[in-house]
Length: 186
Image (cartoon, rainbow, N blue to C red; front, top):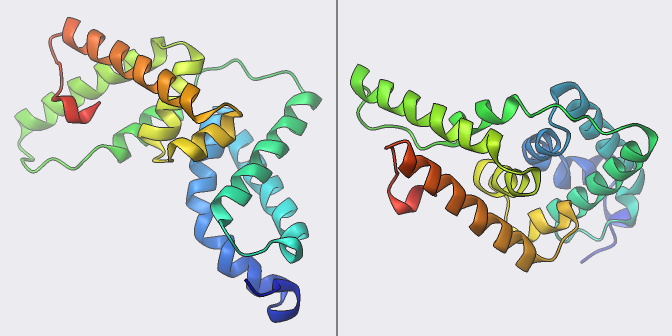
C-alpha cells in the first residue's frame, strides 16, 4: 500500500477512508453508549483522533482501524465519568429499520409486524447486558463477529457463544409469547 502521507493529503485520505464509515460509526457508538448525545460525542472524538492519525494509517481495513480508535476513545471517556446505566431507547428504532421490509403492507400484516417488534423489543430489554450488546452489534448494527469482538474487547469465540445464547433466549421468549419466528430471523 502506498504511503498516504506522500501520496494524498490528509483531507483526501480522510474523505476516502473515513467518510464512508460514518454510518457504521454512528450505529456502533449508539450501541456502545446507549444514548444519542453521548454517541454523537463519541463519533466526533473518534473522527478527531482519526484525522490526527490519518497520516499514519496504511490504508488497509479502515473500518477496523476506526472501530479500534472508537473503542479506545470510549475507554478513555469511560474512565473520566461514571457509566451511564440507562437502557438503550434507540436500539428499538435501529431494530425496526434493520428488519426486512414486508412484502404485504396490509393493515393486518402491519399489526402483526408491530406486535412481533414489541415482543422482540421486550426480549432485548430483558437480556443481560453482555448478551444484548452482541445482539445489537451483530444483528441490529450488522457488524461481523470480528468487528464486534474488537469493539467489546473479547475473543471472537466468546462473542459467538454470547450471541448463540442470546438468540436462544429470544427464541424461547418468542415461543412462550406465541410468536416464534422462522429460524432464519434469529
